[in-house]
Structure formats: structure tokens, C-alpha cells
Length: 428
Ligand code: ACO
Image (cartoon, rainbow, N blue to C red; front, side):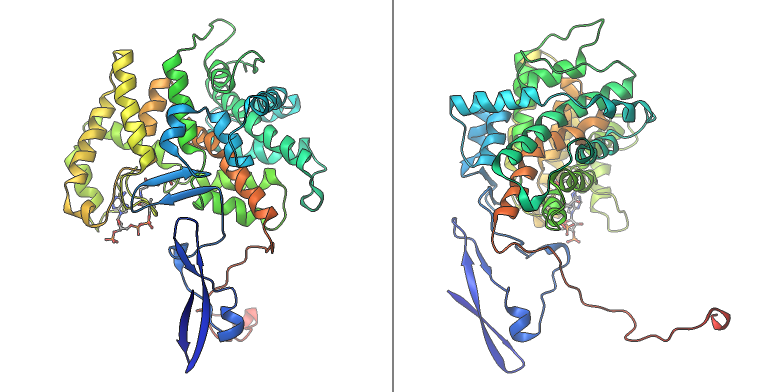
């Protein structure tokens, strides 16, 4: 199938690509050579930057699948470690593969002790996302000698295991640093999520009792964050990685992109918004009115999505988990009540209906993180921990795809066509 472009009395045929679920795209790789034109698409709202076999989203229908498997099924049946293997290696691991992978993660859990000096000299008030991005980037200092030109499968497996395992240690250490407690090291007898909870919440004077419901909740949170195709941070990992910089630095760039409040940083902003309603400075209705007002930059945090024009399937699962977990634990969080009120008001309001704005993954995730005991400024770190396998899978896929091209968009220049150089004594 082809599309036809008519410009300057000349017709150009452009190939139409079709994805495995029927989605279509005009292939413009020859456009500039054949017509002199480039495309203009601020925010890349209509631009496909690559072909990918990792994650499928149908935003109109609210569908999300990793390697073809519905995320609902993975959230119900699988573990974060299995899902990371699935994303990176393209299939769910069998028993033997899972055991080998778990062992790789166990032996890579420690941080180089010199790295801890970095943490020692950082003020405890530092946002953990800064610490995390710096520590991930510094892995290329401690594990040098890796160059994209000559990497092989064994090196890649090792790097991937290092990142997935060490980000958990880094996250827990960032938290311990912020509360001034000694670091707790990973244990070989604990699985990934259990280990993380232990490193976060046990101390030399207090052991942490692992609760199966908390473990499962965290497992599901990480699974639901594990990939989301070409979002801002993943596209950043691909773009930065396309210069052939090492994997650690590419992922550090992704962590920085994730931190922004329009992306992964929204989970922290949602809780801050709900707390400000709880403290009565704002009612849920005021909040909705502010979000609708064109004179106010305020947005309903945790609502809206570039791709979903329907309920984000991840938010649906997390909302159900909130109710389930509170029922089991016989507790409640007043913020859940407020969130549900906001959702009800928004989903019956013309402004949100017309724009197809629904709760996204960040709307309910913070309430669950709070219940687990994770402080608000660590929410985006948790997101980064979950997203690590997705970033790694995309970096690998990009490097393995041919023809390999450095990412380099063009622009429409709107500045002065030609300016004269004015010597300093004559400048006004
Ligand atoms: N509250 C109020 N209005 C909104 C919201 C919101 N949360 N989101 C979008 N809108 C409105 C916009 O003002 C715009 O209205 P207009 O057409 O009258 O100008 C319209 O809906 C379309 O919004 P855009 O910003 O053009 O949509 P875009 O796809 O560029 O942005 C985004 C998506 C950034 C997620 C946006 O919905 C938003 O800012 N949401 C709040 C932040 C948030 O929750 N981010 C997390 C996203 S999920 C993730 O990254 C993990």
C-alpha cells in the first residue's frame, strides 16, 4: 500500500507501513531527498520514531501488552523479574532461565563501596532522583571498558543484570541516606521485591516483617511500570543511546527525563495535590475548576495521557488494588476517598469528557506506595526502578536494528535570515 503526496505539481509515492495489529504509518524516509520537504510535528504527536516489537498500546481501547501478553495477565500471574526477562529477552523465562537470571541479579546486588562516599557527602535533603541519576551514570566509572561497537551477548546480559539489580540497592540506599540510617545490604536468600523491602525498612535495631499482600502490591506496581513504548524517557534513552554512548549514560538520561511532573514525576504531584485538598486549602470541586480554567496553569495531576483516550489499563488495576489492599489490611487512606471523588467529578464533566481525559498510571500509584511506607519523594525513584527493563530492552532493540541511525531531528529555522556582525563599540 502507498500514499500519494502532491507538492509543487509533482506527485510522490510514499510507502505505508503496517504494524502487526493493523496500525499504519507513512514511511517518509525518502521524503526530503525526493521533495525537499521535511515534516513538522512539535511534541512528536504524529511521529513514529522506530519499529518496535516490545510493547503494544491501543490508546483508544485502553490496551497494553508486553511482547503480546496483556498486562492484566502479567499483573495477575507473573513477577517483576519474569516480566523484566520477557521485555529484555522477548520470552517468559523457563524455570532454568529464571533461576540463572535470579542468580545474576543476586551476585550483582552490591554497589562498589567507593560509591557510598558519594552518598556520604550529599545533603540529606537532596531529591533522590538526582542521586539515582548520578549513581547510575557513575556505573560507567566503576565498570568501564564497555563500548557499543564491540559488545557481545554476555556483556549485555551482565550490564542488564547490573542495572536491574543495582538500581534496587541505589533506591534503598538513597532512602536510608535521607533518613540518616545505616545502609542495609541485599541478602541472597530473599527474592527481588522482598529484598528491596528489607533493604528499605529493616535496620540494625528493627527487623522488617515481610507481608505477602505488600509484596504482591509492589510486584504489581513494578510490573505495570516496566514499559510503555516510546514515551518521553524511553525516547530519551533511545536518542541519547543513538550517539553510541554506553548503556549506563543512556539510562541516566532516561531517569532525568522521567523526573519531570508531566511524566513520571506526576506520581509525587498527585499526592501533593490530594494532600492540599485534605488540608482543606482546596475542595475537589475547586480543584476541577482550576484544572479547567485557561487562566490557571494548574492541571489535574494523574489525569490525561498522550496515547490513552480511554481509561489507562494500569490505573484500572491499581485502583482495584487500593480497594483490595485496604480491605485486607482493614485500614483506609483518606486520600483514596478524595482521589475517587476527583475521578467521579472529572469523568462526568464536559471538559474532561470532550478531551478524553482519564486517570493515568500515576493517579492511584502514590496511594499504594504510601501504604507500603514509601515516602512521597521516592515515588518517581520507584517508577524508575520499574521502568529499568523497558529502557534496557529499547536500548538493545535500537542497537540491533538496521540500518542503525543516530537520532537527529530537523527544524524550521525562524530567526534572522542573515545578520551583520556589529563590533562591541557600535552595539546599542
Ligand atoms: N488537567 C486539565 N486539563 C488537561 C489535563 C489535565 N491533567 N491534561 C490535558 N488537559 C487538556 C489540555 O489543557 C488541552 O486542552 P485544550 O485542548 O483546551 O488546550 C487538552 O487537554 C490536551 O492536552 P495536551 O497537553 O495537548 O495533551 P498532551 O498529550 O500533550 O499531554 C499530558 C499529555 C502531558 C500527560 C497531559 O495530559 C498532562 O499534563 N497531564 C497531567 C500530568 C500527568 O499526569 N502526567 C503523567 C502522564 S503518565 C506518565 O507519563 C507516566
